[in-house]
Length: 117
Picture 1 (cartoon, helix red, strand yellow):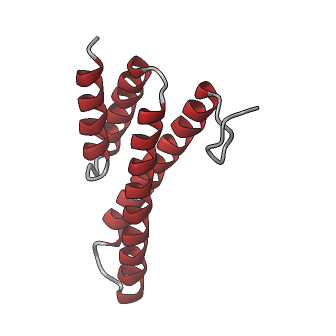
Picture 2: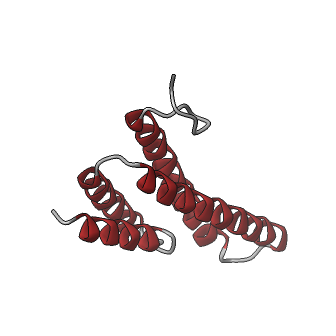
């Protein structure tokens, strides 16, 4: 498979995971994402891209956490949906972090990004 297509699919599925609220759809997107990531192999460019995605999820999780706290404080009816979306974001964030660890190990880098001796 063309790596360009696989990378485009990874970006697409990652973008969808940042906004999808349906649990079944999120689960399917995560499975598709892993399949596409496996097609790419392991290289430093991919590691950098995954790190950017993790940073994006970190920001989204912080924002959504603040929203959930506000909804809890105000007794907003949207709390359940906001909490469910936060749970989905955290699951995706964990998926990317696990993938990052596997990539770093496969490429032979230490967890801090330094090459092994």
